[in-house]
Length: 125
Image 1 (cartoon, rainbow, N blue to C red):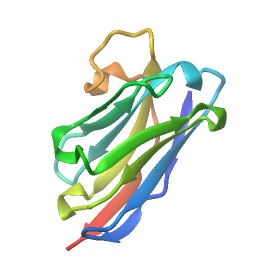
Image 2 (tube, rainbow, N blue to C red; image 1 turned 30 degrees about the vertical axis):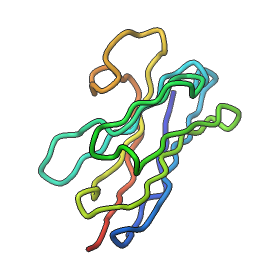
Image 3 (cartoon, helix red, strand yellow; image 1 turned 60 degrees about the vertical axis):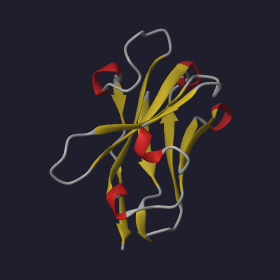
Image 4 (cartoon, one colour; image 1 turned 45 degrees about the horizontal axis):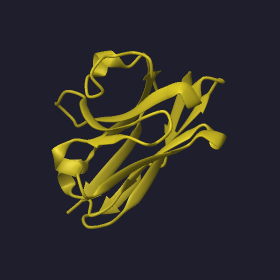
């Protein structure tokens, strides 16, 4: 699938923002979707993932309770709702997709085949 992420911007600490990722192609509903982020000078890291039907989600510890991943298969879209934002959440956020039948770890970059171009979030203090 081809992915396009959007919705990033500049937010004050404590604020909220939702980023979205739209997929093209007819296989989206069979994909496990993930969000990763990359801060300046740091490696790309796992943020959250969601199973093909939305029934299973995972989060990295630093965003648990603040971020929510969801999807709408009728719209070929996956969302990341972010709240209580902190300056350390500043990064480029990437969505990624892989086949649900693949057994690689959901938190590894190498487990995902398709990537969006990223959307930038800046959280000011």
